[in-house]
Image (tube, rainbow, N blue to C red; front, top):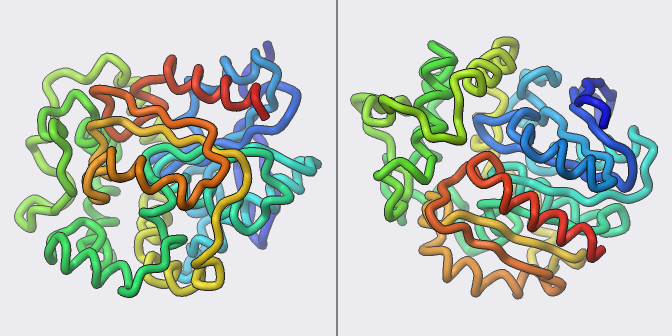
Length: 326
């Protein structure tokens, strides 16, 4: 099997970096916040060996991809356009799209607005009901403030430059702290609760600096993430949050539309994102309304937010089963 290789594509007005391995039907893996292409490093080999062309881009503003300066250039529609452009640039007519965290809304949106391009869609951590695709009666920021208070992390990130400076100050410490913060091994996630920010510590809370890392996370992993963020820092991925209200408005034309391609949903039962939606059981109950061709769900006991990194064996098996059925 060939090694992972790195390439660039000019799509949707910007230059995207992507990692690639394997040959066969295209599978596009979309990372989330505080992640990059490397988040999928435990998926490349198994999927490529099974006969798939595996491509994981750095989404706009992250890692080695271009980072537009204007906040308004980071909407969900911009990121969805990047995925469509990448599939076309790779010379493919169709693909399976898989997303984790903020990559999940991009995967769901790509399947929603371009079902002709998407053979199947899988989302991890974030279901369609917890994205701007779900058009409620209230702007998301106002709804979040009413539900969780002014210290909810979405609202903290809105403060210009504050979260950016905190996260960029020491990249190694940031990744060590934030990855452990969302881990299933962190006792603060058992049970999971919505993330609020302590104003005296900010995003980097000392309580989430572990003496020992979980078995799935190494210092080399942290060094790799830190190196990938050296160029662009965190502003690009934080700008995804800053567009949540704008995304809610832009996605209104699809407010009553279901996501038609075959689908799969995976989550951990200690994922804080599920806590925002109430609990995992409620999330699962709501899925069929958004995903009429739902082929499967997988809830991983003891797993936190970093699904594909924490539980690669189970995630890879679920993805391969889903892919084989398409």
